Length: 316
Image (cartoon, rainbow, N blue to C red; front, side, top):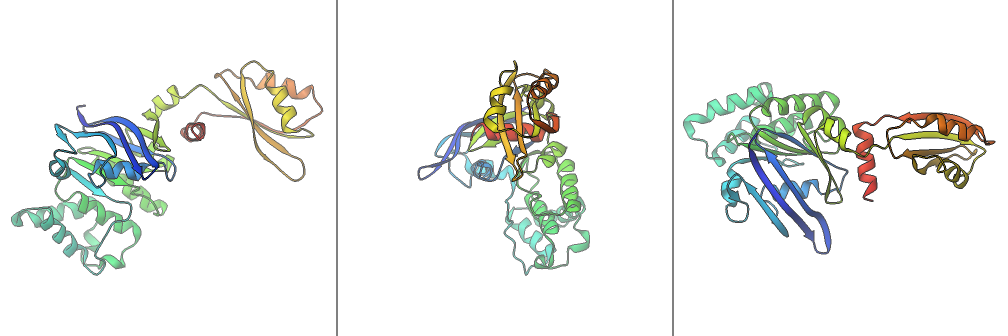
């Protein structure tokens, strides 16, 4: 794949608050990239800088041979953008709204009908073209927003939380549309839903507190994340300090953190290991030599969710 978008040391401050902190990333033509992170991580700010809506405090954005600073209009013509909350004229019929959008986007009058018909088929709008936008569900609104973003057949689509607030069926419908579009477009979309990123994206970038903390496909993230596994234990008759002291004498245990403690004295902890070595036997033998009562004992598999939690916790 060929390079499409090049971002270097991109930074955005709001007064003294750093929302995006010197991020660098290259996005290939035809790639579906998920920008994944918790709420407040800097995802929306990053996308708004990529579209030219926000001016960076520092850093550079290049799309093909164009600079966002020197050639903003050229870049905007290549991008279709679906913001988190699509700004619709709610009294307009869907057809009228999309026809209006086609005029704004400069679609020649002789081509508009065919373009609207194509987008209605692609986004599943045929049955609602003569309904008022204000009568539509959130899922249907998102489909209209996608059609608007696709109106001028842009090379790049930027979608901010496109499935937020949708029910499971609507999420699947939007996901399928994105997959279909992704066969021909470069797509960047933000989400804090792990399953969405895993199901839809060729590549995932995890961002937290304005910094990129991981970048790769699901397989690469699991392989490149540090090899820690976690053993979760629930005990009675034990205090946190004693559990930490005993378990950290085992070679390979990197740390022990408290998960919670109930009023009746059940202490749940997580023991982190430095490697993928199975340390359950060593942990069990250590507990057996004490007076503690073991209620729960399980090893966590390394999933995208645990990687995400580890990476976003590490930077806190």
